[in-house]
Amino acid sequence: MIRLVSVSGGKDSTATLLLALQRHTKEEIMACFADTGNEHDMTYEYIDYLQEKTDVYIHRVKADFSDQWQRRIDYVTNKWPEKGVEPDLIGRVLDSMAKGPTGIPFLDLCILKGRFPSTKAAFCTEQLKIYPITNYTLDLIDQHGPVESWQGVRADESPRRALLNDREDKGGGLTIYRPIHKWTVKDVFAIHRETGTKPNPLYSLGMNRVGCMPCVNCSKGELLEIYKRFPEQIERIAEWEKIVSMASKRQASTFFSALGDTETAYERGNIYKQVEWSQTKRGGTKMDIFSVFEEPAACSSSYGLCE
Image (cartoon, rainbow, N blue to C red; front, side):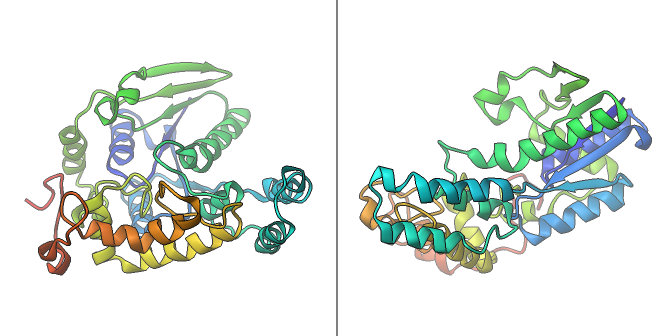
């Protein structure tokens, strides 16, 4: 049986891969990384590091939206007029999609949706990670037989994840296994230390999560850290907001949800406005001068990695 470990470059999936190597031989283990196109370069470099460190080949998969692209164009062309959408708007959206997919999975998905994912509609995980890895897993089953899919999910991450079982038989040769479900964060970093494996360096640069940069779920403080340390990431998101807006019926799509009047959503809620908010004190009205002008520490970790 193949043990397929889903690897994201984060602490939990890395711990899962390290645990798999303690329990099984390298020949029994495979690993897979779903590239969303919204990762920091350090995460891509960390995947390379993990592959070299563990001597386990990490297969890269990417969501491809080529088929959905033409269907979206057909829908806008044929259905939007029936819904009363203005011809000029339809023309602008079709022009924005004329060149075809960008090849960046996260961006292409947002163009197709006409919006970015949110905390309430986190379609990114399913479309960009679960589906591509599931398809790869099914191909492995067809070629090699039963697969045990190892997933780095922990109960204390959320109430929903706490309800998951450690093991699930999905049938058709697929078993889901969550070997660190009962682990704590301390357990996760302990196995890093035991095996001499460095955590993703982004954890020492103020990041709480490293799966995307930024993630739609990132905190106020984390957004400020990203702006101060990696301003190019903010510039990229600003450009993506313009691209997705052009493909949107609203013509105004923001990375973080902007509640209220649709007509002013972009002006009120674009990524630069969110960065301004990240620089304020509690309540979001007065700028926190100390945090804005303070230079980022060489090492800053909420997980105690700098101690």
